[in-house]
Structure formats: C-alpha cells, structure tokens
Length: 295
Ligand code: ZEM
Image (cartoon, rainbow, N blue to C red; front, side, top):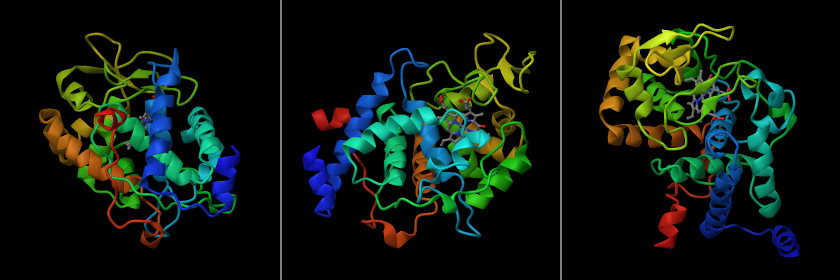
C-alpha cells in the first residue's frame, strides 16, 4: 500500500509491535492451509526456518539465517530444500504486506510463530538479519542426510556448534509434519498429532516396535502395530547411540524438560550466522501467542 511504501521510504524503524503484526499475519496463514497436508502450513514453515539456519559453518562463519540465501539458485534447488518453495511463497505474501522486514527475519519469525501457535514452547527471538546476495549462498551438502548414521549427524551438527544433547533436542521437531514422496523420497508422519508440538516423537521411539518398511522407497522404519508412522534412519539413531539415547529417554519422560531444551536450541539455531552487533536488542523477545494477545 501507499502507507507501507511511505514507511519504507522514510527509513521506517520497526518496533516490537510491528514484528508482532507480522507474527499475527503468519499465524493467520498457518490456518489457511485447507486440504494441504494435515491442515496446517506450520510444519513446512518450521522446516524453512531450519534449513535457512542449518547451513551454518562455525569455522568459516558462513551460512546460517543472516542472508536468506535459499532465495537464490543453486541453493533453492539443493535436494535437501525440495518442497520448501511452498513455504517461501507463503512468506512472500507476508513480505509484500511488510516490505521492511528482511527475509532472514521473516523466515525465522515464521518458524517461531509456527512453533508457538502449534502449542510449542516460547522461542526467544530478535530481529537484525539482513538480505544478502546469491554469492553468499552455501554449497550443497551442509544439511543432514536422513539415510546416514550417528557420525554423520555429529559431523553436521558439531559444524553448526551444537552438542549431542542439542542434536537430540532439535530432532524432536519431527513431532511435526510429515515426509513427502515427491520432496525427500520418504513417506509419512512421525506422530499421530503432526500439527501439535509434543514430546511424542521421543515416546514413540521408545514405546513402539520399529521395523524396516518393505517398499521400493528409501530405507525408513515403520511402527509394527499400525504401520502408519515412520522414522528416518537418523531418527532411529537417537535410541541406538548410547550418548544420544540418554537424552532421548529424558525427553520421552518429560515434555517440560524437552520444551526447555528445545526452546533454547531452536533460538540458537535461528540466530546462526548473524553477527551479534546486527541484532537490534541484546535480550531476545518472548513474543505473545495470538491467544495470549486476546486475553
Ligand atoms: Zn527435518 N526432515 N531433519 N528437522 N523436518 C523432514 C521434515 C521435517 C531431517 C530430515 O532429513 C528431514 C530437523 C532435523 C532433521 C522438520 C524440522 C526439523 C524430512 C521430510 C526429512 C527427510 C521432508 C519432506 O519430504 O517433506 C534430518 C536428517 C535431520 C537431522 C537430525 C530439525 C533440527 C528440525 C527443526 C528444528 C519439520 C518440521 C519437518 C516436516 C516438514 C513438513 O513439510 O511437514
């Protein structure tokens, strides 16, 4: 609109309230999903925020959420990012309404809004990411490959600066959403409530009997009882590797403990690659949910 254009021209400095408006717009979009998947765009928005951030390399300080380089080829076309155009296109609509926000802030705020609105823990978040250029895009292969083992998970996540406990805590995001044959080649959801953040992912890992699925697709597991849930080889590793297993057990036993660790790890994840001096505030914000704002 003209008012928005004027704001941008006048070097508009957004305040917390303005980011809450963006949060609320994203919250509306989550529910516009209709017949899409399980009726929410939440999971795919979480995946977008994660893939935008998880390219970080702590040695070279490249990658991460700062420049939102997944907008550009070839990163947009990396195999790991298959299907994320759906999420980027949704965020583009928000960008048109709030042109002052950077893509990195928008995509990570999308992840925060999705997690919080799907009954997850509060994710401390702050703005400051800037739009970058295609030349800042990361090489292929920085995101985890679901067919691999514990060594691979450690290589990938240690590169981002995470430890074993954080690897396990972050993996619980698979309580949400599903695999799509035409995106990753895998098929199916991890839990019975793929649009609600719960610790069911860990509980199911321990409580169900997991067997290799007999099919023509990539190696994945299915629950023996209902054959309606799935685990990736990298999910199953969390109950096979001794160090991972101890954290997975703790998270299966207490959703509160997981929520705390998950919130902290996701907040860190979404800030990877952003120089501290770029953030507009030292203390990250705890943004209110739509429900809390109505109180
Ligand atoms: Zn995922 N993830 N992920 N993940 N992920 C998929 C889907 C989702 C791995 C992986 O290969 C895959 C994290 C970690 C890891 C989400 C969030 C987070 C899919 C299915 C695959 C194959 C994609 C498809 O077909 O649509 C691997 C190997 C990981 C290493 C541990 C972390 C960390 C996440 C967030 C914090 C989410 C929400 C989805 C569901 C997306 C959707 O569209 O439903």
